[in-house]
Length: 74
Image (cartoon, rainbow, N blue to C red; front, side, top):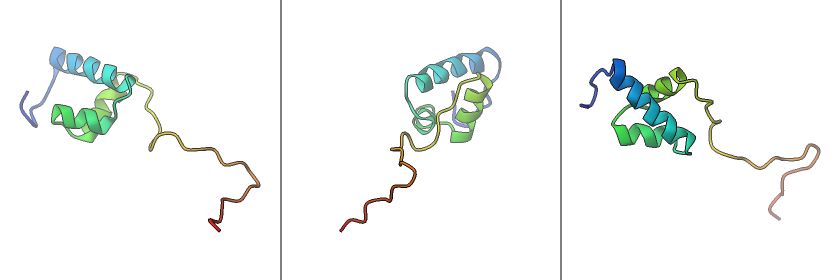
C-alpha cells in the first residue's frame, strides 16, 4: 500500500480488522497511524466504522475527591 493511496473493498476491511485488533490490544491511534503511514483521522475513521469503543484522551487520571484541595507543595 502506497502512502495516500485510496483503500477500498476487501483491502479496507482487512486493514480495519488489523487496526481494530491493535487498538483493542492497547495500541494508540497515533501509533497505529504511524505504523501504517496513515493520518490520525484516517485511523480514527476506520475504527469508528468498525464500531470500536474508543478510549478517552490522555489515559487514566487519578480521581480527586470533592471538597479536598490539591497539595500546595509547601
